[in-house]
Image 1 (spheres, rainbow, N blue to C red):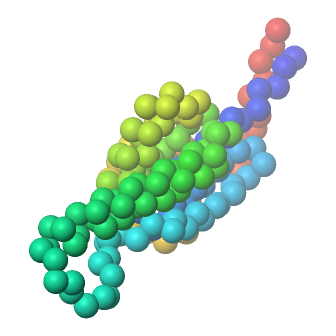
Image 2 (tube, rainbow, N blue to C red):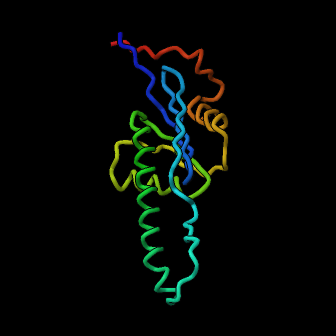
Image 3 (tube, helix red, strand yellow):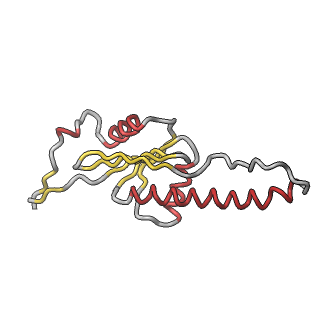
Length: 154
């Protein structure tokens, strides 16, 4: 007889400021919180205005800020993807654009993570996120704590 272990399943709530990863396996649940160093609004420096025309002052700075912003997001998404690697299925949700950007990054780079569910949701606490992930992967009316391992005869 061979015992089939429960796979690792993940839920990920993400926005541009933080990601909450919930990993569920036969060993229980693990919750990771990843903070990004990304600022949502690109801020202009507080210096007094220069005498040059507006376009000459701002275009290079905005372009370099945009590149820096994009680079920070890429690093943040890579860190999140690294936490998802053990998962065989990923429930991806969150309030804004970050979830779609992350999904595109996963698909573009052909990463070995599987997004099986994708939805928009509001800001949530870590407890609410963990509960949503558990509900998503638990069949209705079934308590995971009482679940026995699946046994397959050869």
